[in-house]
Length: 131
Length: 389
Ligand SMILES: [Zn+2]
Image (cartoon, rainbow over all chains, first blue to last red; front, top):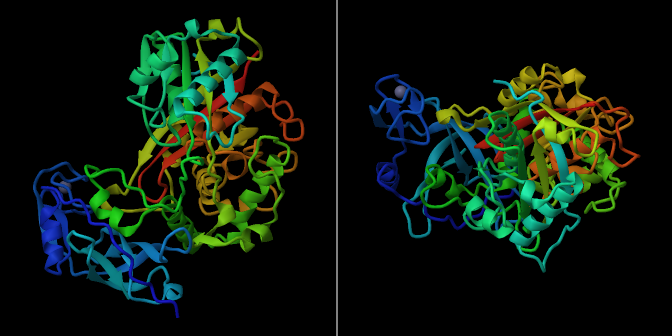
Protein backbone atom coordinates (compact mmCIF):
# COMPACT_ATOMS: atom_id res chain seq x y z
CA UNK A 1 0.00 0.00 0.00
CA UNK A 2 1.36 3.36 -1.11
CA UNK A 3 0.26 6.03 1.35
CA UNK A 4 0.17 9.60 0.06
CA UNK A 5 3.17 11.22 1.75
CA UNK A 6 2.92 14.68 3.24
CA UNK A 7 3.59 17.34 0.64
CA UNK A 8 4.78 20.83 1.57
CA UNK A 9 1.81 23.03 0.73
CA UNK A 10 2.28 26.59 -0.47
CA UNK A 11 0.13 29.06 1.47
CA UNK A 12 -2.97 30.41 -0.25
CA UNK A 13 -2.94 34.17 -0.79
CA UNK A 14 -5.65 35.47 1.53
CA UNK A 15 -7.55 38.59 0.48
CA UNK A 16 -10.61 40.50 1.69
CA UNK A 17 -13.14 38.45 -0.25
CA UNK A 18 -11.86 35.02 0.82
CA UNK A 19 -10.66 35.73 4.39
CA UNK A 20 -13.82 34.25 6.03
CA UNK A 21 -13.17 31.00 4.16
CA UNK A 22 -9.62 30.65 5.46
CA UNK A 23 -10.51 31.88 8.97
CA UNK A 24 -13.13 29.12 9.09
CA UNK A 25 -10.62 26.59 7.74
CA UNK A 26 -8.35 27.46 10.67
CA UNK A 27 -11.26 26.40 12.90
CA UNK A 28 -11.85 23.18 11.00
CA UNK A 29 -14.88 24.38 9.05
CA UNK A 30 -15.48 24.26 5.31
CA UNK A 31 -17.45 27.26 4.06
CA UNK A 32 -19.08 27.63 0.68
CA UNK A 33 -21.25 30.40 -0.71
CA UNK A 34 -25.00 30.35 -1.24
CA UNK A 35 -26.93 33.04 -3.09
CA UNK A 36 -30.14 34.22 -1.46
CA UNK A 37 -31.46 35.57 -4.79
CA UNK A 38 -31.24 32.36 -6.86
CA UNK A 39 -30.69 29.85 -4.06
CA UNK A 40 -27.68 28.27 -5.78
CA UNK A 41 -24.44 27.34 -4.06
CA UNK A 42 -21.22 28.23 -5.84
CA UNK A 43 -17.51 27.50 -5.57
CA UNK A 44 -14.91 28.95 -5.39
CA UNK A 45 -16.56 31.66 -3.29
CA UNK A 46 -17.14 35.14 -4.72
CA UNK A 47 -18.94 38.26 -3.38
CA UNK A 48 -21.16 38.34 -6.51
CA UNK A 49 -23.02 35.17 -7.53
CA UNK A 50 -21.58 33.68 -10.76
CA UNK A 51 -24.97 32.16 -11.54
CA UNK A 52 -27.31 35.19 -11.31
CA UNK A 53 -24.95 38.12 -10.52
CA UNK A 54 -26.73 39.03 -7.30
CA UNK A 55 -24.56 40.50 -4.55
CA UNK A 56 -26.68 38.72 -1.90
CA UNK A 57 -24.29 35.86 -1.30
CA UNK A 58 -23.88 34.25 2.11
CA UNK A 59 -21.29 32.00 3.70
CA UNK A 60 -22.75 28.64 4.70
CA UNK A 61 -21.02 25.70 6.31
CA UNK A 62 -20.68 22.56 4.24
CA UNK A 63 -21.19 19.21 5.93
CA UNK A 64 -17.77 18.36 4.47
CA UNK A 65 -18.94 15.18 2.81
CA UNK A 66 -18.65 14.40 -0.85
CA UNK A 67 -17.63 12.04 -3.61
CA UNK A 68 -14.64 12.01 -5.96
CA UNK A 69 -15.66 13.36 -9.40
CA UNK A 70 -12.22 12.86 -10.98
CA UNK A 71 -8.62 12.59 -9.84
CA UNK A 72 -5.05 12.03 -10.98
CA UNK A 73 -2.01 10.80 -9.10
CA UNK A 74 1.05 12.87 -9.99
CA UNK A 75 3.57 10.08 -10.35
CA UNK A 76 6.58 11.96 -11.70
CA UNK A 77 8.03 15.45 -11.81
CA UNK A 78 7.17 16.25 -8.20
CA UNK A 79 9.25 15.69 -5.03
CA UNK A 80 6.43 13.53 -3.64
CA UNK A 81 3.50 11.81 -5.31
CA UNK A 82 0.14 13.45 -4.64
CA UNK A 83 -3.47 13.17 -5.72
CA UNK A 84 -5.24 16.10 -7.29
CA UNK A 85 -9.01 15.68 -7.45
CA UNK A 86 -12.37 17.27 -7.95
CA UNK A 87 -14.73 16.44 -5.11
CA UNK A 88 -18.46 17.05 -5.44
CA UNK A 89 -19.87 18.08 -2.07
CA UNK A 90 -23.25 16.90 -0.84
CA UNK A 91 -24.39 20.52 -1.28
CA UNK A 92 -23.84 20.11 -5.03
CA UNK A 93 -20.72 22.14 -5.79
CA UNK A 94 -17.50 20.59 -7.06
CA UNK A 95 -14.15 21.83 -5.75
CA UNK A 96 -10.53 21.26 -6.66
CA UNK A 97 -8.63 19.57 -3.83
CA UNK A 98 -6.25 16.78 -2.88
CA UNK A 99 -7.09 13.30 -1.65
CA UNK A 100 -4.91 12.47 1.36
CA UNK A 101 -4.33 9.95 4.18
CA UNK A 102 -5.04 6.99 1.91
CA UNK A 103 -3.63 4.35 -0.42
CA UNK A 104 -2.72 6.13 -3.67
CA UNK A 105 -3.55 3.05 -5.70
CA UNK A 106 -7.00 2.44 -4.22
CA UNK A 107 -8.65 5.73 -5.16
CA UNK A 108 -11.63 5.60 -7.50
CA UNK A 109 -14.19 7.93 -9.02
CA UNK A 110 -17.39 7.97 -6.97
CA UNK A 111 -15.57 7.14 -3.74
CA UNK A 112 -17.06 8.80 -0.65
CA UNK A 113 -14.70 11.24 1.09
CA UNK A 114 -14.83 13.66 4.02
CA UNK A 115 -13.02 16.92 4.61
CA UNK A 116 -9.78 17.18 6.58
CA UNK A 117 -7.61 20.26 7.01
CA UNK A 118 -3.90 20.30 6.21
CA UNK A 119 -1.39 22.96 7.25
CA UNK A 120 0.31 25.17 4.67
CA UNK A 121 3.71 26.82 4.87
CA UNK A 122 3.11 30.09 6.70
CA UNK A 123 -0.58 30.37 5.85
CA UNK A 124 -3.96 29.08 6.96
CA UNK A 125 -4.78 25.38 6.55
CA UNK A 126 -6.63 24.27 3.42
CA UNK A 127 -9.44 21.73 3.02
CA UNK A 128 -8.52 18.36 1.59
CA UNK A 129 -10.40 15.08 1.54
CA UNK A 130 -9.83 11.57 2.84
CA UNK A 131 -11.81 8.35 2.39
CA UNK B 1 -21.47 40.68 -40.39
CA UNK B 2 -19.74 37.48 -41.43
CA UNK B 3 -16.00 37.22 -42.09
CA UNK B 4 -16.52 34.48 -44.68
CA UNK B 5 -14.00 35.07 -47.49
CA UNK B 6 -13.28 38.56 -46.13
CA UNK B 7 -9.62 37.72 -45.45
CA UNK B 8 -6.95 35.26 -46.57
CA UNK B 9 -3.84 33.70 -45.06
CA UNK B 10 -1.01 34.92 -47.30
CA UNK B 11 2.15 34.20 -45.32
CA UNK B 12 3.31 31.48 -42.95
CA UNK B 13 6.59 30.65 -41.24
CA UNK B 14 7.55 28.07 -38.65
CA UNK B 15 10.91 28.58 -36.95
CA UNK B 16 13.13 25.55 -37.56
CA UNK B 17 14.79 25.77 -34.14
CA UNK B 18 13.73 23.47 -31.32
CA UNK B 19 16.33 24.74 -28.84
CA UNK B 20 17.32 28.40 -28.95
CA UNK B 21 19.76 28.88 -26.09
CA UNK B 22 21.54 31.73 -27.81
CA UNK B 23 18.52 33.75 -28.89
CA UNK B 24 16.14 36.08 -27.06
CA UNK B 25 12.38 35.67 -27.25
CA UNK B 26 12.13 39.05 -28.99
CA UNK B 27 14.67 37.94 -31.60
CA UNK B 28 12.66 34.78 -32.28
CA UNK B 29 9.55 36.92 -32.79
CA UNK B 30 11.44 39.06 -35.30
CA UNK B 31 12.82 36.02 -37.12
CA UNK B 32 9.40 34.44 -37.59
CA UNK B 33 7.94 37.80 -38.70
CA UNK B 34 10.72 38.09 -41.29
CA UNK B 35 10.10 34.54 -42.45
CA UNK B 36 6.36 35.06 -42.89
CA UNK B 37 6.90 38.31 -44.81
CA UNK B 38 9.33 36.56 -47.17
CA UNK B 39 6.85 33.72 -47.62
CA UNK B 40 4.11 36.20 -48.52
CA UNK B 41 6.30 38.37 -50.75
CA UNK B 42 5.60 41.41 -48.61
CA UNK B 43 7.77 43.87 -46.71
CA UNK B 44 7.58 45.17 -43.16
CA UNK B 45 6.11 48.45 -44.45
CA UNK B 46 3.05 46.61 -45.74
CA UNK B 47 2.00 45.54 -42.25
CA UNK B 48 -0.68 47.75 -40.69
CA UNK B 49 -2.04 45.38 -38.04
CA UNK B 50 -0.12 43.47 -35.35
CA UNK B 51 -1.23 40.65 -33.05
CA UNK B 52 0.59 38.95 -30.20
CA UNK B 53 -0.23 37.16 -26.94
CA UNK B 54 1.34 36.52 -23.54
CA UNK B 55 4.47 34.91 -24.98
CA UNK B 56 5.57 38.29 -26.36
CA UNK B 57 8.16 39.90 -24.08
CA UNK B 58 7.44 43.20 -22.39
CA UNK B 59 4.11 44.96 -22.64
CA UNK B 60 2.62 43.13 -25.64
CA UNK B 61 2.27 45.27 -28.76
CA UNK B 62 3.84 48.29 -27.02
CA UNK B 63 7.13 46.46 -26.76
CA UNK B 64 6.89 44.43 -29.95
CA UNK B 65 5.66 47.10 -32.40
CA UNK B 66 8.60 49.23 -31.32
CA UNK B 67 11.09 46.34 -31.35
CA UNK B 68 10.02 45.18 -34.81
CA UNK B 69 9.94 48.73 -36.16
CA UNK B 70 6.33 48.57 -37.27
CA UNK B 71 3.83 51.36 -37.82
CA UNK B 72 0.34 49.93 -37.45
CA UNK B 73 -3.24 51.18 -37.14
CA UNK B 74 -4.62 48.12 -35.37
CA UNK B 75 -3.27 46.00 -32.49
CA UNK B 76 -4.68 43.10 -30.47
CA UNK B 77 -3.06 41.17 -27.63
CA UNK B 78 -5.87 38.77 -26.74
CA UNK B 79 -4.45 35.98 -24.59
CA UNK B 80 -6.29 32.69 -24.37
CA UNK B 81 -3.15 30.60 -23.89
CA UNK B 82 -2.17 28.30 -26.72
CA UNK B 83 -5.39 29.00 -28.62
CA UNK B 84 -4.58 32.74 -28.85
CA UNK B 85 -3.18 32.63 -32.37
CA UNK B 86 -6.32 31.12 -33.87
CA UNK B 87 -8.27 33.86 -32.11
CA UNK B 88 -5.82 36.37 -33.60
CA UNK B 89 -6.44 35.09 -37.12
CA UNK B 90 -10.17 35.46 -36.50
CA UNK B 91 -9.78 38.94 -35.02
CA UNK B 92 -7.50 39.94 -37.90
CA UNK B 93 -10.16 38.83 -40.38
CA UNK B 94 -12.75 40.84 -38.44
CA UNK B 95 -10.52 43.92 -38.38
CA UNK B 96 -9.87 43.61 -42.12
CA UNK B 97 -13.59 43.18 -42.83
CA UNK B 98 -14.28 46.28 -40.73
CA UNK B 99 -11.63 48.30 -42.58
CA UNK B 100 -9.36 48.68 -39.55
CA UNK B 101 -6.33 47.18 -41.27
CA UNK B 102 -5.34 45.54 -44.58
CA UNK B 103 -2.42 43.25 -43.76
CA UNK B 104 -2.05 41.80 -40.27
CA UNK B 105 0.96 40.06 -38.76
CA UNK B 106 0.59 37.52 -35.92
CA UNK B 107 3.72 36.29 -34.11
CA UNK B 108 4.47 33.68 -31.45
CA UNK B 109 7.82 32.67 -29.97
CA UNK B 110 9.28 31.29 -26.79
CA UNK B 111 12.06 29.24 -25.29
CA UNK B 112 10.55 27.08 -22.52
CA UNK B 113 12.99 24.26 -23.30
CA UNK B 114 16.03 26.45 -22.70
CA UNK B 115 14.36 27.85 -19.59
CA UNK B 116 13.63 24.40 -18.12
CA UNK B 117 9.84 24.57 -18.23
CA UNK B 118 7.86 21.42 -17.44
CA UNK B 119 4.23 20.38 -17.48
CA UNK B 120 4.57 18.91 -13.99
CA UNK B 121 5.29 22.23 -12.27
CA UNK B 122 2.29 23.64 -10.38
CA UNK B 123 1.06 26.80 -12.09
CA UNK B 124 0.85 30.02 -10.11
CA UNK B 125 -0.74 32.91 -11.97
CA UNK B 126 -0.14 35.46 -9.20
CA UNK B 127 -1.66 36.54 -5.89
CA UNK B 128 -4.54 38.45 -7.49
CA UNK B 129 -5.77 35.48 -9.52
CA UNK B 130 -9.21 34.87 -7.99
CA UNK B 131 -9.05 31.07 -8.26
CA UNK B 132 -5.44 30.89 -7.07
CA UNK B 133 -6.03 30.53 -3.31
CA UNK B 134 -8.44 27.66 -4.00
CA UNK B 135 -6.17 25.82 -6.42
CA UNK B 136 -2.47 26.58 -6.10
CA UNK B 137 -2.01 24.76 -2.76
CA UNK B 138 -3.34 21.61 -4.42
CA UNK B 139 -0.56 21.39 -6.99
CA UNK B 140 -2.53 21.91 -10.17
CA UNK B 141 0.07 21.53 -12.91
CA UNK B 142 -0.57 21.16 -16.63
CA UNK B 143 -0.23 17.38 -16.76
CA UNK B 144 -2.57 16.51 -13.88
CA UNK B 145 -5.20 19.09 -14.86
CA UNK B 146 -5.50 17.41 -18.28
CA UNK B 147 -5.19 13.95 -16.75
CA UNK B 148 -8.36 14.44 -14.69
CA UNK B 149 -10.27 14.99 -17.93
CA UNK B 150 -8.91 11.71 -19.29
CA UNK B 151 -9.74 9.91 -16.04
CA UNK B 152 -13.35 11.12 -16.14
CA UNK B 153 -13.67 10.27 -19.85
CA UNK B 154 -12.51 6.72 -19.15
CA UNK B 155 -14.98 6.44 -16.28
CA UNK B 156 -17.88 7.88 -18.22
CA UNK B 157 -17.39 6.28 -21.65
CA UNK B 158 -15.02 3.37 -21.18
CA UNK B 159 -12.23 5.07 -23.12
CA UNK B 160 -8.94 3.17 -22.78
CA UNK B 161 -5.26 4.06 -22.56
CA UNK B 162 -4.77 2.06 -25.77
CA UNK B 163 -7.23 4.29 -27.61
CA UNK B 164 -5.51 7.46 -26.38
CA UNK B 165 -2.18 5.97 -27.44
CA UNK B 166 -3.39 5.72 -31.05
CA UNK B 167 -3.35 9.53 -31.20
CA UNK B 168 0.36 9.57 -30.41
CA UNK B 169 0.98 6.70 -32.85
CA UNK B 170 -0.68 8.69 -35.67
CA UNK B 171 1.34 11.82 -34.84
CA UNK B 172 4.56 9.81 -34.89
CA UNK B 173 3.72 8.36 -38.31
CA UNK B 174 3.58 11.94 -39.61
CA UNK B 175 6.61 13.21 -37.69
CA UNK B 176 8.94 10.65 -39.28
CA UNK B 177 8.76 12.74 -42.48
CA UNK B 178 9.47 16.09 -40.78
CA UNK B 179 13.21 16.74 -40.53
CA UNK B 180 12.63 19.45 -37.92
CA UNK B 181 10.49 17.30 -35.61
CA UNK B 182 11.90 16.68 -32.12
CA UNK B 183 10.61 13.09 -32.06
CA UNK B 184 10.81 11.37 -35.46
CA UNK B 185 10.68 7.76 -34.37
CA UNK B 186 7.49 5.90 -35.21
CA UNK B 187 5.98 4.50 -32.00
CA UNK B 188 3.44 1.79 -31.30
CA UNK B 189 0.51 1.66 -28.91
CA UNK B 190 2.65 -0.58 -26.70
CA UNK B 191 5.48 1.98 -26.69
CA UNK B 192 3.06 4.56 -25.30
CA UNK B 193 1.72 2.20 -22.65
CA UNK B 194 5.27 1.20 -21.68
CA UNK B 195 6.38 4.80 -21.18
CA UNK B 196 6.30 5.96 -17.56
CA UNK B 197 3.07 7.31 -16.11
CA UNK B 198 3.38 11.03 -15.44
CA UNK B 199 -0.09 11.80 -14.08
CA UNK B 200 -2.62 8.94 -14.08
CA UNK B 201 -3.77 7.94 -16.64
CA UNK B 202 -1.39 9.88 -18.90
CA UNK B 203 1.96 8.38 -19.87
CA UNK B 204 5.02 10.33 -20.92
CA UNK B 205 4.17 9.64 -24.58
CA UNK B 206 0.65 11.01 -24.06
CA UNK B 207 2.30 14.40 -23.40
CA UNK B 208 3.54 16.93 -25.93
CA UNK B 209 7.17 17.96 -26.21
CA UNK B 210 8.62 21.07 -24.60
CA UNK B 211 10.37 23.05 -27.33
CA UNK B 212 11.73 26.46 -28.17
CA UNK B 213 10.79 28.16 -31.41
CA UNK B 214 7.89 30.07 -32.84
CA UNK B 215 5.84 30.89 -35.86
CA UNK B 216 4.06 33.69 -37.68
CA UNK B 217 1.18 34.13 -40.06
CA UNK B 218 0.05 37.05 -42.21
CA UNK B 219 -3.63 37.73 -42.89
CA UNK B 220 -4.63 40.07 -45.74
CA UNK B 221 -7.58 41.60 -47.53
CA UNK B 222 -8.66 39.33 -50.44
CA UNK B 223 -7.89 41.93 -53.12
CA UNK B 224 -4.32 42.13 -51.84
CA UNK B 225 -4.09 38.36 -51.37
CA UNK B 226 -5.01 37.81 -55.04
CA UNK B 227 -1.96 39.84 -56.09
CA UNK B 228 0.35 37.61 -54.04
CA UNK B 229 1.55 34.05 -54.53
CA UNK B 230 -1.21 31.52 -55.25
CA UNK B 231 -3.08 29.63 -54.08
CA UNK B 232 -5.42 31.75 -52.08
CA UNK B 233 -6.25 30.38 -48.61
CA UNK B 234 -9.56 31.94 -47.60
CA UNK B 235 -10.90 32.13 -44.07
CA UNK B 236 -14.45 30.78 -44.10
CA UNK B 237 -15.51 30.71 -40.49
CA UNK B 238 -14.20 31.15 -36.95
CA UNK B 239 -15.40 30.58 -33.42
CA UNK B 240 -13.99 31.27 -29.98
CA UNK B 241 -15.09 30.33 -26.48
CA UNK B 242 -13.90 30.18 -22.88
CA UNK B 243 -15.03 27.51 -20.43
CA UNK B 244 -14.27 27.27 -16.73
CA UNK B 245 -15.66 25.57 -13.66
CA UNK B 246 -19.17 26.98 -14.15
CA UNK B 247 -19.44 28.29 -10.59
CA UNK B 248 -18.77 24.85 -9.16
CA UNK B 249 -20.90 22.86 -11.63
CA UNK B 250 -17.71 21.31 -12.96
CA UNK B 251 -18.25 19.14 -16.06
CA UNK B 252 -15.12 17.62 -17.54
CA UNK B 253 -16.96 15.66 -20.23
CA UNK B 254 -16.90 18.47 -22.77
CA UNK B 255 -14.57 21.32 -23.68
CA UNK B 256 -15.10 24.84 -24.99
CA UNK B 257 -14.69 23.38 -28.50
CA UNK B 258 -18.32 22.33 -28.16
CA UNK B 259 -19.13 26.05 -28.20
CA UNK B 260 -16.53 27.44 -30.64
CA UNK B 261 -16.94 24.65 -33.21
CA UNK B 262 -20.62 25.08 -34.12
CA UNK B 263 -20.14 28.85 -34.52
CA UNK B 264 -17.26 28.30 -36.97
CA UNK B 265 -19.06 25.56 -38.93
CA UNK B 266 -22.21 27.72 -39.22
CA UNK B 267 -20.26 30.72 -40.46
CA UNK B 268 -18.33 28.61 -42.96
CA UNK B 269 -21.49 26.81 -44.10
CA UNK B 270 -19.82 23.40 -43.92
CA UNK B 271 -20.09 20.37 -41.67
CA UNK B 272 -17.49 18.21 -39.93
CA UNK B 273 -17.74 15.45 -42.54
CA UNK B 274 -16.69 17.98 -45.23
CA UNK B 275 -13.31 18.62 -43.56
CA UNK B 276 -10.42 16.94 -45.42
CA UNK B 277 -7.62 17.84 -43.00
CA UNK B 278 -7.66 18.95 -39.34
CA UNK B 279 -4.95 20.50 -37.20
CA UNK B 280 -6.06 19.68 -33.68
CA UNK B 281 -4.33 21.02 -30.59
CA UNK B 282 -2.39 18.20 -29.01
CA UNK B 283 -0.93 19.27 -25.69
CA UNK B 284 -1.91 15.75 -24.61
CA UNK B 285 -3.61 12.87 -26.36
CA UNK B 286 -6.78 13.53 -24.35
CA UNK B 287 -6.88 17.11 -25.69
CA UNK B 288 -7.23 15.72 -29.23
CA UNK B 289 -9.89 13.21 -28.25
CA UNK B 290 -12.04 15.83 -26.52
CA UNK B 291 -11.86 18.28 -29.41
CA UNK B 292 -12.64 15.63 -32.03
CA UNK B 293 -15.82 14.78 -30.14
CA UNK B 294 -16.74 18.37 -29.32
CA UNK B 295 -16.29 19.51 -32.93
CA UNK B 296 -18.66 16.77 -34.05
CA UNK B 297 -16.26 14.51 -35.97
CA UNK B 298 -17.86 11.72 -33.93
CA UNK B 299 -20.45 11.44 -31.18
CA UNK B 300 -19.59 12.30 -27.57
CA UNK B 301 -18.01 9.29 -25.93
CA UNK B 302 -17.04 7.61 -29.20
CA UNK B 303 -13.74 9.44 -29.61
CA UNK B 304 -11.74 6.49 -28.36
CA UNK B 305 -13.04 4.24 -31.10
CA UNK B 306 -12.78 7.05 -33.69
CA UNK B 307 -9.04 7.65 -33.15
CA UNK B 308 -8.11 3.96 -33.05
CA UNK B 309 -6.53 1.84 -35.75
CA UNK B 310 -4.80 4.69 -37.55
CA UNK B 311 -7.91 6.71 -38.35
CA UNK B 312 -5.92 9.94 -37.90
CA UNK B 313 -3.04 8.89 -40.18
CA UNK B 314 -2.83 10.69 -43.52
CA UNK B 315 -3.37 8.39 -46.46
CA UNK B 316 -5.17 5.67 -44.53
CA UNK B 317 -7.42 7.30 -41.94
CA UNK B 318 -10.68 9.16 -42.30
CA UNK B 319 -9.45 12.32 -40.54
CA UNK B 320 -5.78 13.10 -41.28
CA UNK B 321 -4.54 15.29 -38.43
CA UNK B 322 -1.35 17.16 -37.47
CA UNK B 323 0.66 16.05 -40.47
CA UNK B 324 3.72 17.96 -39.20
CA UNK B 325 3.83 15.67 -36.15
CA UNK B 326 2.02 18.23 -34.01
CA UNK B 327 2.86 19.09 -30.44
CA UNK B 328 3.16 15.42 -29.57
CA UNK B 329 6.19 14.95 -31.86
CA UNK B 330 7.19 18.09 -33.75
CA UNK B 331 7.22 21.14 -31.49
CA UNK B 332 5.22 23.19 -28.99
CA UNK B 333 6.93 26.58 -29.06
CA UNK B 334 6.37 28.73 -25.96
CA UNK B 335 4.17 25.90 -24.63
CA UNK B 336 1.59 27.30 -27.03
CA UNK B 337 0.71 25.15 -30.03
CA UNK B 338 -1.99 27.21 -31.76
CA UNK B 339 0.26 28.92 -34.27
CA UNK B 340 1.71 25.71 -35.70
CA UNK B 341 -1.84 24.34 -36.03
CA UNK B 342 -2.71 27.20 -38.41
CA UNK B 343 0.58 26.88 -40.31
CA UNK B 344 0.23 23.15 -41.11
CA UNK B 345 -3.40 23.64 -42.21
CA UNK B 346 -2.25 26.34 -44.64
CA UNK B 347 0.50 24.03 -45.94
CA UNK B 348 -2.10 21.35 -46.58
CA UNK B 349 -4.39 23.76 -48.46
CA UNK B 350 -1.45 25.03 -50.53
CA UNK B 351 -0.40 21.46 -51.28
CA UNK B 352 2.93 22.19 -49.58
CA UNK B 353 2.86 19.58 -46.81
CA UNK B 354 5.42 16.78 -47.02
CA UNK B 355 4.44 14.57 -50.00
CA UNK B 356 4.20 11.53 -47.72
CA UNK B 357 1.48 13.23 -45.63
CA UNK B 358 -0.11 15.65 -48.10
CA UNK B 359 -3.88 15.15 -48.34
CA UNK B 360 -4.83 14.76 -52.01
CA UNK B 361 -6.65 17.77 -53.45
CA UNK B 362 -7.09 19.31 -50.01
CA UNK B 363 -9.65 22.10 -50.39
CA UNK B 364 -11.17 22.38 -46.91
CA UNK B 365 -9.24 22.34 -43.64
CA UNK B 366 -9.84 23.10 -40.00
CA UNK B 367 -7.49 24.29 -37.27
CA UNK B 368 -8.52 23.91 -33.65
CA UNK B 369 -6.83 25.30 -30.54
CA UNK B 370 -7.22 24.77 -26.82
CA UNK B 371 -5.34 27.01 -24.39
CA UNK B 372 -4.96 27.04 -20.62
CA UNK B 373 -6.00 24.04 -18.55
CA UNK B 374 -8.60 21.67 -19.96
CA UNK B 375 -9.48 20.57 -16.41
CA UNK B 376 -10.24 24.07 -15.12
CA UNK B 377 -10.22 27.17 -17.32
CA UNK B 378 -9.46 27.01 -21.01
CA UNK B 379 -9.98 28.87 -24.25
CA UNK B 380 -10.99 27.27 -27.52
CA UNK B 381 -10.75 28.62 -31.04
CA UNK B 382 -11.89 27.01 -34.29
CA UNK B 383 -10.79 28.16 -37.72
CA UNK B 384 -12.12 26.81 -41.03
CA UNK B 385 -10.22 27.59 -44.24
CA UNK B 386 -10.55 26.75 -47.93
CA UNK B 387 -8.24 26.66 -50.87
CA UNK B 388 -9.49 29.39 -53.20
CA UNK B 389 -8.80 29.97 -56.87
ZN1 LIG C 1 -27.44 33.79 -7.53
